[in-house]
Length: 232
Image (cartoon, rainbow, N blue to C red):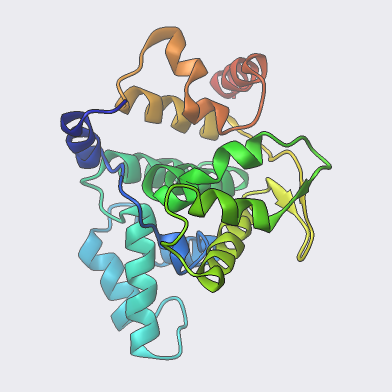
């Protein structure tokens, strides 16, 4: 159980807690994030990201309202603030290996969106080739408070959540979602270990944390991938 004091500390690092999340409105918006990082330098501030999206329309949104909503959703999911270590390190790692970006984005979304976080155990419990049922994610979202969301909201949330898992390579298919294994790189392992470190873990516990389990590979593979990264 995480204490309130620990939550406060983790919030300063960029973690988010609570009941609501950006997946109530959108998926993890991978393509928008990529376009934003192409438009703004690594050192960009939160205000500069806002200017690129809202004033310069770097994401090609049709109205000012949609630009403001997009900025709000991206800020909610990723922080977009280099004062937050979780975002600052992701931004430094982002351009090193483009193939790692989709899982890297999911790793940060997992740390910042409680709604998305709820779905992880269900997704990761399935093996490659197995079907993922949207209705079961809806059940998970309504488990603690069955009257909190309407059926239409639950369907929308679960579609957004499945969309993010699909963008990151954990699922495949447009309507029927089928579990598959994502491509994991040394960048993703490095970020998972960093997330564990910020969470207060050290030593062997870093390799057995929820952050490394999210990578969906055996512990031996995590170590092998990390060694490969050191040699490259």
